[in-house]
Length: 279
Image (cartoon, rainbow, N blue to C red; front, side, top):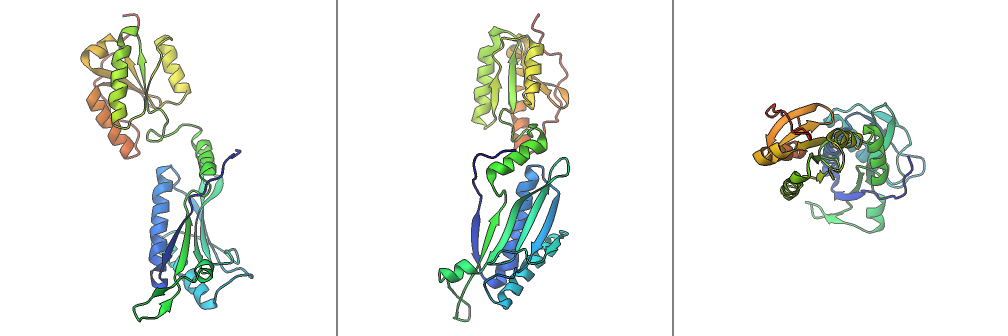
């Protein structure tokens, strides 16, 4: 896997020491939600502690390390300790995701930073009226976005889930007479944010289906005169096979719901025989 670009999804949060653990829990919640959406549900987690060369007092290091450890316990996550593996400016949590064949990849990290708030002279007024220094929380969920998508491609072998697939549905016209109908369906789907392609229809139906499957299009719909006249589509899933016949609006409703909930299309329609190009 070679990455030719490098874009980090770095973000920074300033918080009060007493709010630190809660902020970290929320960052871990967000990280879990996003990674699971992409199909990564298993992590190796390390809590990295103070290295020999570091900045900040023992008191603030202890408080930050305790906050990170407390957040992991709130999440109920098992973790290891990387003694001395923290950054010079603070301790951190590193998440390594596991791919389909068990390889681990370092992606997400949550880090506490005392150095930059001190260097920039950042202060807040406490409830007691004293001026205090906040703690900065660095968080990166993907790490390098380009690298993350390289990992994702390898993990799913290009078999993107429905919600993420570049083309979510391909319409397969079996005759020139239905191409206008296919374009109308594609426009209606586009208005709902569904990514639909219309095959050129220059190949026999079996070849159109094979091409769509080889290109890993999740769903395809056979469209003949019968479908155009009835306002329906004969749907086929690459993974499941024939899903039956659907009215166009009903199908777009089911598709929108599946995409929104990051689910595969599993609802079965009417079991009508799809159009044959020789009819």
